[in-house]
Length: 196
Image (tube, rainbow, N blue to C red; front, top):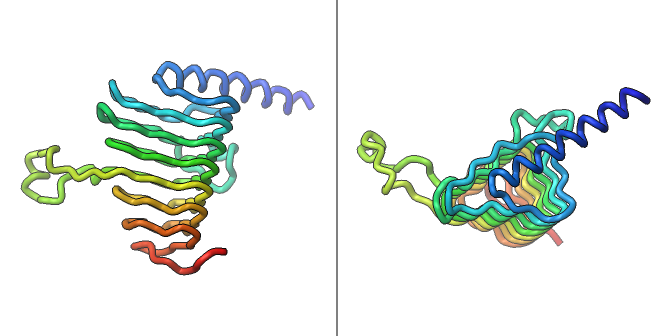
């Protein structure tokens, strides 16, 4: 009993400190945020990170036994970038990295180890990479619509919209839009089933 009480108090204290950390990074969040340990946060000047109501962020293996390997990353790294997470969203050890726009709508489940990127990080052209020509890096907004489930270790790349109620299978790599009410799997992700 004493051990459980100690664990509860530690979680309560660390969770409160994690919320303070979010505020210090200029991250706005709604009521009911559940964060029991520290996510990694990066927000450029003039960028926006906003969390809706009743968002849960898991960062450690004991918070989600499905296999969290690292803390959740919330990053909006360019001026004007926006990372917006809706209401009732669950995130477990994922990376949400944004240079222009990543929008996560309400009731989305983001599984362990998911990566969402709106950038290629490097230019496609080899000569541009050699000289670090950042003007050649391609970016495009990402939108994850309502009630989507992103399976463990899946990856969503720049310019993708995933339609409402769709499911992305574990370890799938999504490189093009996914319609509503489907299941996609594979590399690159392809429709394998229709829902409803």
